[in-house]
Length: 195
Image 1 (cartoon, rainbow, N blue to C red):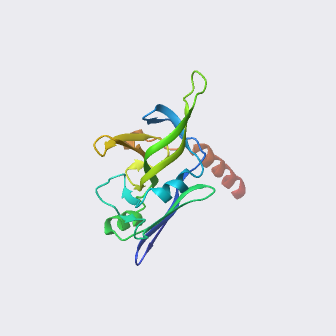
Image 2: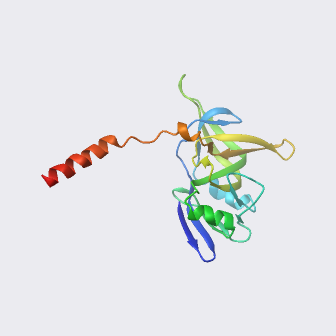
Image 3: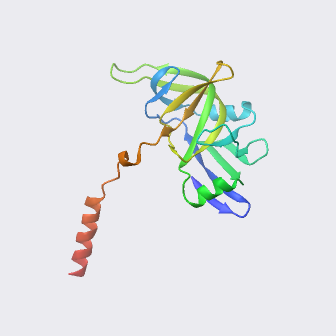
């Protein structure tokens, strides 16, 4: 994800999802699975989904940009779903300046999939063949990954919106990487050079 604050707002671009890659375990209407979005599924979704908005942390209360007015541009290429967005909202601009935007996520519905059974102790793989794209979301307070889902009922129960993003653990639970071995190697090399 590249974030650039300019005079006319904040410009953000990057990959929302890489197609053909397996997710971590996700809970879906089909149960707990590993999931992959098949190539061309996003391309078709962009063509048929109509206006697609940009949200913050999947909060549907405010759209910060949208495809209808050109402030959001979406395309699928050989890597996956790529987004470019220009946002003029002062709050989002300030978050970008402070480095608080952590990544992308997306919401989908009307999913057509195929399940691949696997070994006894392995989760099945859900191959998403087609979908409708509800929105893409900038992530601030969640983990931006294609790694979890919450399902909410919309439109009087006939549409399931699947959102990709995980809640952040409490700060004291976050495991910090252990760089002690690396730091020790640097210390030894630096010490040897000064001798």
